[in-house]
Amino acid sequence: MSVEVKNVTKKFGSFTALDNVSLKVESGELVALLGPSGSGKTTLLRTIAGLEFPDPGTAQILFYGEDVTQIPASERKAGFAFQHYALFRHLSVFENIAFGLRVRPKTTRPPEAEIRARVDKLLKLIQLEPMAGRFPSQLSGGQRQRVALARALAVEPKVLLLDEPFGALDAKVRKELRRWLRQLHDEIHITTLFVTHDQEEALEVSDRVAILRAGKIEQIGTPEEIYDNPASPFVYDFLGNVNLFSGRMKDGAVVIGETEFSLGEGTGETDTAAVAFVRPHDIRVTRQANGPALAALVLRSNAAGPVANLELKRLDSGEIFNVQLSKEQFQELAPKAGEPVFVELKNVRVFSDDYSI
Image 1 (cartoon, helix red, strand yellow):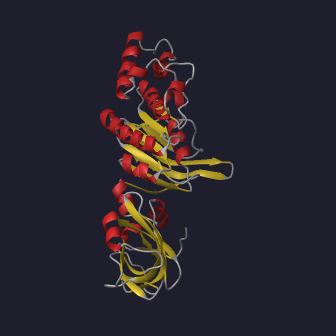
Image 2 (cartoon, helix red, strand yellow):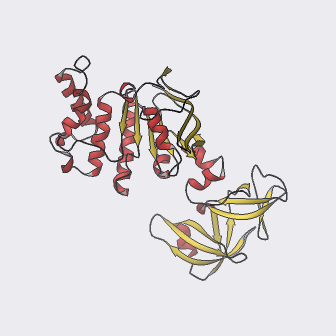
Image 3 (cartoon, helix red, strand yellow):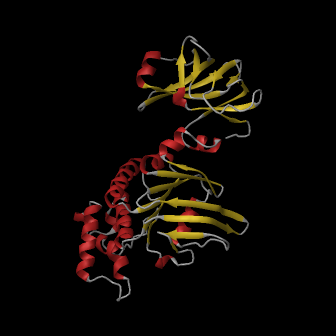
């Protein structure tokens, strides 16, 4: 069941939440809507669900080619799960999942035996069979979220829409649940869109990621595409940590301070101001310069966790930047606070000098 959004604009007073947005989600695909607060991701999801309607114009929302733009949410057959679960406190886990089936009109309500069979199947799917008789207050946050997802699936929706489904959970539970969501999706193959502000979550779980900014889709692609080939400075900065170095273009290279670093592609005009983007893990730290390098001073280091993080200061400009080293590299280098070092910049990407964090 594919979902297609065409030319959707949505304004709230003078604020434009969505600005002529178009997006297609293929049948069985899991797509993340990622962006900062106010970028329009939740409004887009609610518009697809039928909880909001596009402004008048040429906007269309299609479910498997069928125009549902003016059809209310109750008739779109979309399953919706919110960040805060919205479970009924007075109903058991079993009855919460069965709720959407039981409230159907008598003419479309499944027989009781079918309702029970469907709920039992979902309880097994979410691995909560022993807890069918418990109430939401007796469950952990992660278990409540799984119940909310099962309730959304019980009505056999055409599309599953998730709004920050793990946002209210602690980091460890979030990791467990997003692995579970990916496994669940691989089992049932339902077309799914989910909103998140967590870059790691979007990159780990989704087939494709749509990055929104100021009501527009800045870039859409696979996690690898958008991380390795960001289309704009905003995308580069938004996805993970990045260091910015001001410089100037010169014959296929960028000059930072007095040091020239070659570029592999898209170099822009010569002798123009530029901003070089470099990931912390793409910086090599040495005690002797073996090629183009910047002189720096070690300010502090933190080796807790799977990688070691260094904070350095350029000797020429005083700018502070960050470096990530593997534990092996860190142990071999053994940097000390106050020690001078050299840094080599790898995989440098350059954008015109019109961007700041």
